[in-house]
Image 1: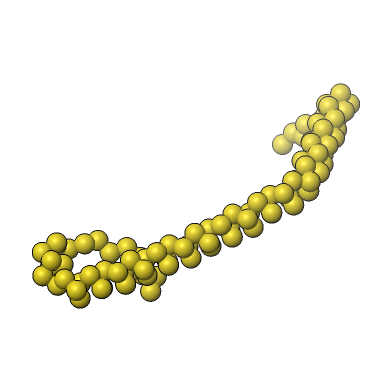
Image 2: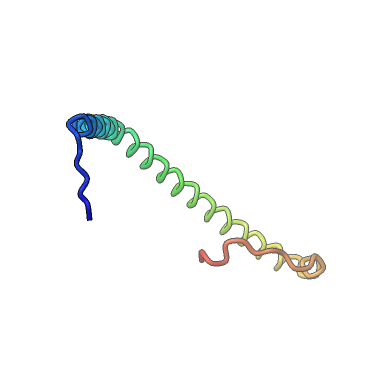
Length: 93
């Protein structure tokens, strides 16, 4: 097995590549550190929005089911003639 010898020019080129890579990584780390607070705040706001929408939808579905029950009790013959209806959100109660 023969070992490959690197010339001084190759060594200098490789050192320059490593220094460029280290600077690129350091620059990206500075960018990431500066961007993290804004990204975290956006994520928190998005999560709160999704939670609010979820709560609203649960309220709407509960209200819809209550209205369906009242209509079913008040007009059983008409309700039976409509046929099967899709159920939404059965797994959340």
